[in-house]
Image (cartoon, rainbow, N blue to C red; front, side):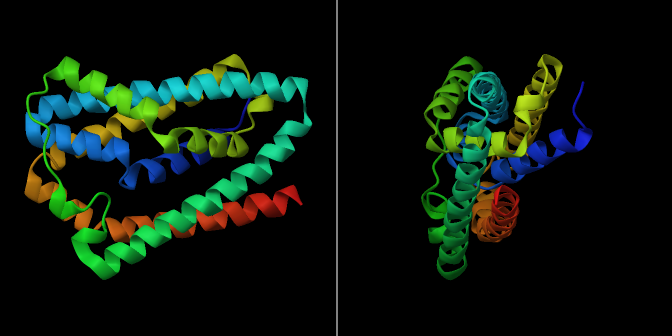
Length: 218
């Protein structure tokens, strides 16, 4: 490993905050666990972990090759990542405002309308989770931001392997907690009612990181 531990911790911390805030992957894990049981929820967590590991590997290797061919790309990506982070922050803060003002109705998808997905065995839940992850519009932009934080141009094969393994394990672990703790409708709704606070904290943090990236790119 040639990079400092802080390079990995910065990415994993960013991912943890992004995963904690409700989105398509979280809602899929919750509804799978609610409707088909904790086993289905845990298989959904495995699907999220594998999907995020795949995104990490593909984006890291692909952008490492681009950076080697066109070094200026790294600077351009830093500015683009900062702007994406600011956009993320605006979305999270808007969701927090809606949730604070509107209660459950302002949460991700509306906590009051949350319905479990019944009839999923482990395999079906795993495949469903992979599909949601692959089609999640937030995934591509998330990994573009990650590559502005992580020095992929200086990373070796072992560094990228560690980054992706950690991202996969982190995602699986957080979603497994969701599946175990929020596997009932009342628990899931209580979580989503409190999601405005999570969204607000994540939004403010992302704004601060965006400002730091833009300052460094100047």
